[in-house]
Image 1 (tube, rainbow, N blue to C red):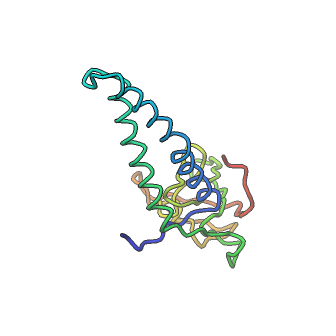
Image 2 (cartoon, rainbow, N blue to C red):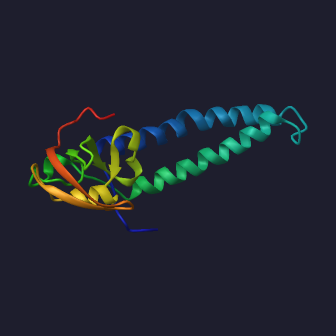
Image 3 (cartoon, rainbow, N blue to C red):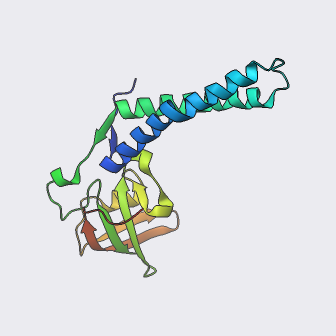
Length: 164
């Protein structure tokens, strides 16, 4: 087993625990019940409920193993414990202006919490790495596939930002 830590925000950790509990207590027992019922009907080779149910059980079991392993190495990072709250670190919500003048708001989260459509980016992403340790008012350089870009940081916060 890997000893690498899985950095998560409190919300990300709770979300993964909730999903695992839902799979264990609700979804898996429900699918097991359907598979048992379908198996009792006889010929399994053409029994869609049985075939789909077995496939769904494998998917659920795979997801449960993944979540269990990730939670075992989880390290919850509390921004309140972070020294230097004016700097960008894990858990920060950062608002910046890119070269095209567009204002962007992102939150730096763990790799298992990434949700780009809601502004959640991984702490190991190129954008997050460029922003790390910067402060409000700083301009950072980001090397992108289209060339060098500058990002002007206008706000750094650790409070719940309202990002989904």
